[in-house]
Amino acid sequence: MDLNLIRKLVKIVDTSGVTDLEIEENGLKVKIAKKIRSAKVAAPETVVQTEPAAAPQPETKTEAEQPPSEEKPEESENLHVIKSPIVGTFYRAPAPDADAYVQVGDMVSPGTVLCIVEAMKLMNEIESDVSGKIVKILVENGKPVEYNQPLFLIQPT
Image (cartoon, rainbow, N blue to C red; front, side):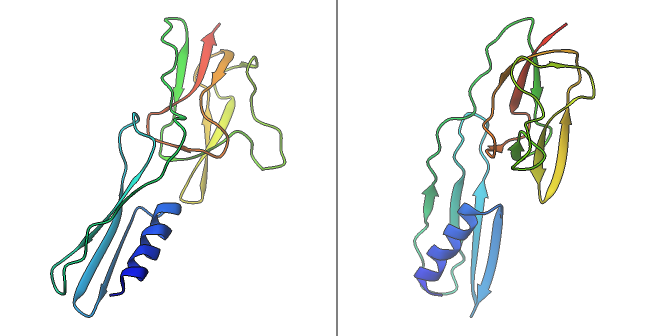
């Protein structure tokens, strides 16, 4: 298998929503997988593993550089944290040309839609589970989010 082809496949996996890919060609099996790290590290890691059926190929690791968007929310006893129930992409509005569901300062009640987290082309509406005022939005629009990552800080009323 051509090393340039492997590099292209690593790049495709790294930039897409695919988490792992396995290819077998002429007795050589190549597996490319992203390792999802804990919330402390925002960058995914791509690892290429080959099984010894032909000449050994070097293991390639690629780290994508991202600004740290997963800040720790301010620890305050009176703020309620809304966390992502799934891994996906965070969207503040139902469509690119639409207004955001909520802004900082808005009052919300239980059941109010706060955002969408897209996972595998499914749009999952994230709703508030408390009444209160939006104090801070912790994620930028269009950025990936991890399971249990804080999204909003709400001051309950």
